[in-house]
Amino acid sequence: MNLWEFVTVVSIVGILAGVYQTWIKENKAKGVSAEESMNQQKQIDNLEERVKVLEAIVTDSKYDLNQKIDQLKQKESA
Picture 1 (cartoon, rainbow, N blue to C red):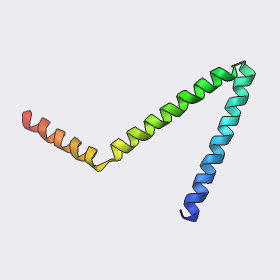
Picture 2: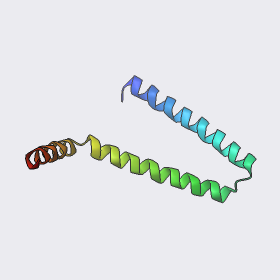
Picture 3: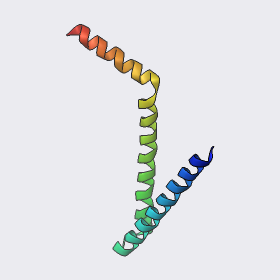
Picture 4: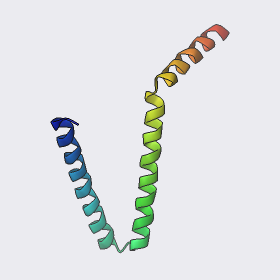
């Protein structure tokens, strides 16, 4: 990991930590229970994982190749 990647990762983690702290404070002010807050956080974590998987699929070169093959098949059948 080079210096700029490290700086970027540290910056992103710092920003996310600040957002998380603000979110927790707002939930406490609204009277949201700790259990509800944890459930919401679990849902967010699950959605983030799903997005990562989808990003991996879409950026995979095989996915791009399959898309091009499907387009050619559609042109032939038209």
